[in-house]
Amino acid sequence: MLSLFLFLPTFFVQSDGGESDPRWSGFPAQDMLSYAVQLTPDFAKQTVQGSVEYRVRFAEESSIVQLHSLGGGKDWSVTYVDVAGNSLGDTWAREITTIQFPQTFQKGETVTFKAEFQGKPKDGLYFRNNRHGEPLLFTDHFSSRARGWLPCEDHPSDRAHFSLDVALPPKMVLVGSGVDPEEDGVLETVSEIQSYLFAFSVGPYSRVSEGGDDRLVPHFIYRKDKPIARRGLKYHAAWMQKMEQAFGTYAYGKYCVVQVPTRWGGMENAGNTWIMERLFDGADHGIGTLAHELVHQWFGDAVGYVEWKDAWLSEGFASYFGPWLHEADGGGVPLSQAMAQSRTRWLRSKIARSRPVRWGDFQKPDDFFGSSAPNTYQKGAWILHMLRGEMGDASFFTGLKKYYEKNTGKGVQTADLQTAMEEASGRPFQWFFEQWLDRPGCPELSIQWEKNQVRVTQTQEGSLFRFRLPLSWVDAQGVLQKRFLRISAKETIFALGLGYTSPRIDPDIELLYSNSPIEEVYLRERAE
Image (tube, rainbow, N blue to C red):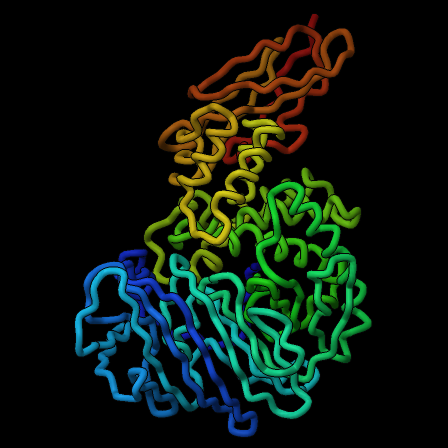
């Protein structure tokens, strides 16, 4: 997902925030197995009527099921019934509905019940005209907006099967989570997915074929945008092949992109990526964004995360391997240049030195993709880039392949990635992950080039960092030298020899660091 907030409303209440806030946590006492949604939209009134049938398995003895929900109101009603149609008691408070059953269920038992709803959805499901004035109905669930119309366990730790049956108006088609609908209004997922990845759109779409892979179904594009869309939709087959070779098998039954008025630049719904309406208008025709979103199908979707503070496991991966893919197709800048741009953007952000990547004091999950986006995206990408340098390519890609294959279809924590990389390299990396993820900032360096040596001083407040500092210079014999200086002390001195020239710090863009507020000082005197 690329972060880009647009005009759609949000409905959140301020609180202490963090994973301990029940609104942003999961419900470990239960496991949502499936959601079967039926929906009849009324485009003229911009209302929907429908139901969802739930199957829930209990992880412990209980007589209740809890769902995230924005509740009912003047224009929106939700009621709960059992399989016989009898009303179930429910209470609602602070975006959580608690449904009370007349009996107690034992650990491992399952229950089936329904929610029936009608009216104007509060959030997550929208009637909008597209930029050409054509009507659409679409979801935009990320990060926690599914609850605005679909009571659900709205948390990344829970995955379930979804099915959808929509009464389609004439001349409109359905696209969304599950197999290609062939205009019959029915979808069903093959894989279990998170509630925020359950997505669908109904509208008068045209189709744009890309080819090269049977899993690429024709994309869903506005008719008037087909000519410009074709300029960007050319590399998915090659990208899928490269991703599968590097990491493992694609996890879903199809892939396509869909134009919608999403609040995001792109949103990686499993098997069908939402893209903002104007994506193809730019100079690169959206190719960089398309690469980023495809990476998410592996990292973020197939391998997800179970706590919001680990969102970097999704966005950091896409922000690193998106440019990696785009460079390979010949249209993108070199990865080193992309990382230099990423470093500059992060260093200029307000939160670079004040928040860690794994940040526990968020007010709502959107914070990771809004105010903390530079950490989630740019610093997340840099963590992978530096880990690759520490491990070397062979161990790095071996570790990521095992990490993906072991955890496909699951949510993970950073510790799972750490374990995979330690096993692949035979080296401990707890220091690396704690340093880069759990403390803010980066090394602040003063670099002094002296007569026959370089002096490196860490100037940041607080703890010292441990890292490899890449240096290059031309020695007295005219030979280019490159070394990695291992830094862990306040001050480190490295001998270069008399007569060196052309000294450079980090010539190949391999370290996240800053030499501000003290600028790099060139003090080397000409050898006598």
